[in-house]
Image (cartoon, rainbow, N blue to C red; front, side):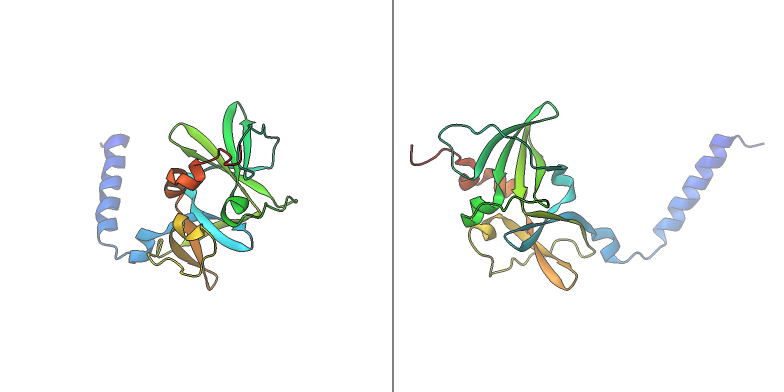
Length: 179
């Protein structure tokens, strides 16, 4: 008589062998998942793996001699997060604070950053992954932070490259030039 472990192992082996014989479409292997959000009426996406949490706007501690788009630091459940108004940084117009305004928290290295956005629109899936082409008509400094686009509901959404964002001198330069 065969013990349960041996039986399970044989089932597992048979499943692996059958899976190898399946012809999966390439798109099933390349599906990309992201979070959709709006900044100044432009819908964008960011890879879901970059997102730690989405929160409502919270109190921040403004630091002296910083640019207007840097709101300061916030204590998010015991972790300090640097909060930046993504819309104001890109287009020099502050985020319109309202019921849909959110902060998307991202972790880069040991640092938590928060991007203030006009609205979070939901999960965005792209069966073809992130396409390489970058939309040429993006306004402001947005194009320098985009790594490609995804197709969603007959539209192409720019995909934010958060690693490029957090290493960009514009993003890193929160010290005010006027003081």
